[in-house]
Image 1 (cartoon, helix red, strand yellow):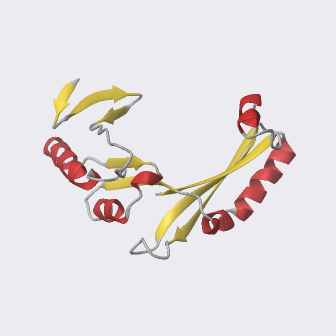
Image 2 (image 1 turned 90 degrees about the vertical axis):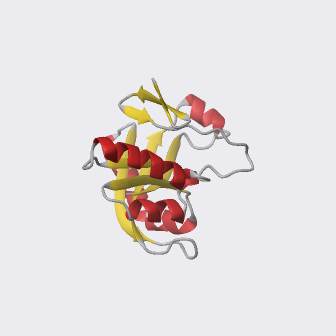
Amino acid sequence: MADFSGGTLSSDGGALLLREVERTSDHSAAQGVVPALEKIVAAIRKRGRQARIMVRGDSGFGWEELRAWCEGQFQVYYWLGLAKNSVLVEKLALALADARARRCRCGAVSVRVFRGFEYRTQKTWSQARRVIGKAEVAQATAGSVRLKLLKVAAQARVSVRRV
């Protein structure tokens, strides 16, 4: 492991952790991420100008500032989660119905169906972006049924990511 501007370099399953920041709950996960990425990307570019860089984060990092910064950089891509909302669920309704039908036909433990579409928030995004949505129908395990207060023994999930 090597020191890296206040963080630590380590290998974890093929991914490289370049910075870790602890915050109190009154701060957003995305606070200060763009200045940190500027330093990290500059350091990577010194070693490999043509390197493709992937920024991965959950929906807590999905701020317009981060999206716009990544889109303005050469070979910097992002994969950020989106919080589920009624518009996204509606856009994935047919995919979820497809996943349910496929599970019924083949009896698989889990079926996932992905759909791509253009999406833009009403207020916070500066432009429409391509989104990949996932509709999943899976057989619930005893643990997940217990956690869901004994709902139906199959679970349907919808998740969305910006690609």
